[in-house]
Amino acid sequence: QHQRGALLSHRMLSIEPKEYSQRTFALAFDGLFCDSARAWATIGWKAALSLWPDLGPSVSTISPRDAGVRRAWLLQEQSIDELGNLDEEGMPDWLALKVEKLRPAVQSEYESLLLVRLCVDEALASQRSKRGMRPLTAGEVYSSWSQLRESLLFRCSVDKQTLAHAYEEASEQWANADSDGWHGAHSMRPGAVRALRSAMRNSNNRVYLLTSRRDRALRLTRSAQVLVPKDQRRFA
Image 1 (cartoon, one colour):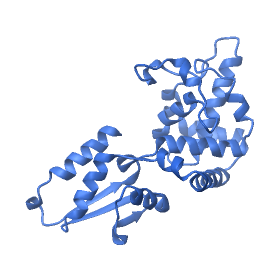
Image 2 (cartoon, rainbow, N blue to C red; image 1 turned 120 degrees about the horizontal axis):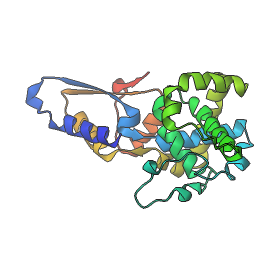
Image 3 (cartoon, rainbow, N blue to C red; image 1 turned 45 degrees about the vertical axis):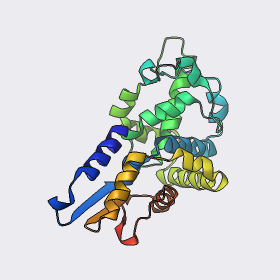
C-alpha cells in the first residue's frame, strides 16, 4: 500500500498540463489515500467483543507462538513474544497483525468480526491440542475465505446484518468517544495527499474520490486540510 501511494503521487505530479486539455482521476480513498488497516482491525475487535464478550478473557491466555505468528511478519528489531502485548482496547498485537494481513481476503467490513473470531478460535484450539495442531496460516485463510466465512456464520449462529450493525455501532462509538484515537488509526498517506492537492489546484483536472463510507472520508480529508468539492465526491 505504501508503494501504491508513492506511485500514485509520482504519476499524478509527473503528468505535464500540456499533455491533455482535461484529465480525470477516479481514485479509491481507502488504501491509496488512507491507510485504515489498523482501524479496520480495531473496530472488528470492538464489535466482536460486543457479540462475543468471552473473547476478551480468552485472548489474554494465548501466546503469539500458539497463534501461528510468522517471523516474517515482524520488524527487524521485534521478537515474536512481544506480540503478546495488549493494546488499550485489550486486543493483542498478534491478533491485530494477523487480521490486518488478511484484509485483502474480505469484501465487506462486517467480515472483520469473523476474522477475529476465526483467529482466536484457531489459536485456542492450537493451544489446547495435544497432537501439535496448528492454526491456519494467513495464506490458507486467504485461499479458502469464502467457505470459511459461510462456515463461521453458521457455527456462530449470526447473520451478516447483525455483524454489519455491530461494526457500524463500534465505529461510531469509537469516533465519538475518542476522536484523536480514531483519527490516529486512519493515517493519511502524505505523498498521496500532496498529489491530490496539486491535482485539484489545476482547473483542467477532475478528481473523483471513490469510497463506501462518505462521512468518514469527508472527516478525514478535512482533517488533512483537503477540501473535495461536492461535485467531485463519489460514493459506491
